[in-house]
Length: 229
Length: 210
Image 1 (cartoon, each protein chain N blue to C red):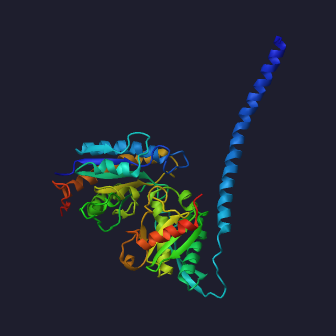
Image 2 (cartoon, chains in turn cyan, green; image 1 turned 60 degrees about the vertical axis):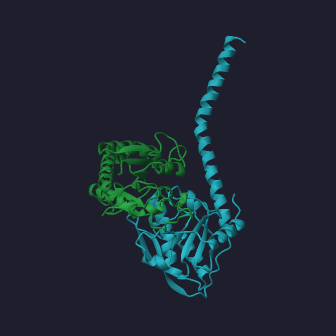
């Protein structure tokens, strides 16, 4: 190979290297975009698989008290009254209430839970303990921190307390599984007091109560119904 | 025997970065530097200070608790930076009340280790938060209740201190807060010291001085 050909070859290689260097960041952005899209699609698919909560127009429209975050961002909850058609059945009513809470307030700044979080299941046991099963987005998309995690759980428990008096305690599952924490801080291994004795509790309301045998059975039931990915 | 050891717990670490801000602020890194300043302030008050991590490791919740549970006469302080909250404010958290459960031999289960210390933790939390509220306007006057996993297995007066937040526009805003936070924690723990009388024999109930 003569010097001229070597020069040509080196030139072609140099152009290829520069081209690859320019293309690499764009390729990385495309891969990241595709990954985000896949995650969203999986979350959407899970939502679509959920049976819709049966809300009929025959159900009376009543004033519901929702607890969303303060617009000032100071980590406090603010009660908001809205009119909703709510079932008289406690389980259906709780599902309707929680789905409204998850859908979020008019002002996105007042959100307490991630917009892509979904309620996968909800049961009330005879002793007043409720089991709420949320999608993984509740744990994965919530801003990490004691204050943000507590605000999310408090908004759920206080909204249930205000609208579904049958719920005494709440056990939170993530995709059918009992998890250690919501997002690294708030303890989800035990139940949260919602009504009853909790009505005398000082604010904030995230008080724990020990797991009872019926709750353990209910968790097993939910685990059986929702297979982990 | 009185309080002489403080176990500092810089939260997160390793692959767990904790809260992340828009300016590339990582909670796991900030709390480590934060811990160094708190340590210095506590040592100046005459305390021996131990840390649950010195570098970029991520010990388990139980390993972190074990660091305090192996000591006698220690308090445990977990350090955090929030994702949310009003910038420039600080909150101290303690566990809400839960019944003290003992097994037939009188021992307290590991996962309920905090239960006998809740009154002491609350007192320590209020004392630290009172110092913080004096220095950082907009912070609550008293400690807040939150069921924090890290505190539940800790058999010592235990609090978590969370600074708001990683969402500040510039890291220097957090850095400027650190000396004040460190001083407040050290003064709060020093004020708490006479309240904590550690039992001579293991298993003897804790006493709280008025």
